Length: 138
Picture: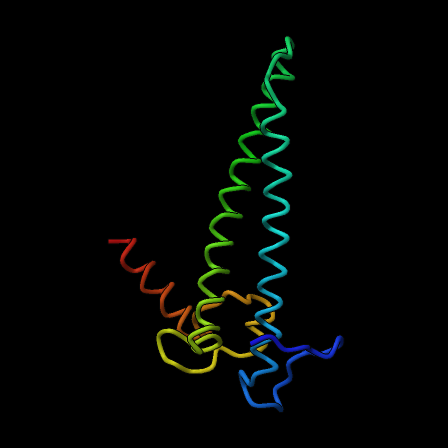
């Protein structure tokens, strides 16, 4: 269901949480973010395939290797983000987007604005991280 958003629309606390306009706002935001990540990834791929390392200077070579390692890490991070964006888009399709997967409570607009791929409320996220720390210290 495609819907046109007012150009200056911003979700507010005084409308129904995850009403069709809000859902569409986040859907478009996620799609734009995904498109940007894919475009950047294409740029990274192009510059990676250009760089055969023929520079004689060892310092240059080391610098190029470092850049390449950084680009690969960035691509890996982008790939993981794209996967989380895809999962968020699926939650929009099935109607669970914006609700904590642990408590079913609304995640909240401020958190979703800051992190549109959030799957838990801040409270649930903090509990989750505390549990991970406890188990990691064993």
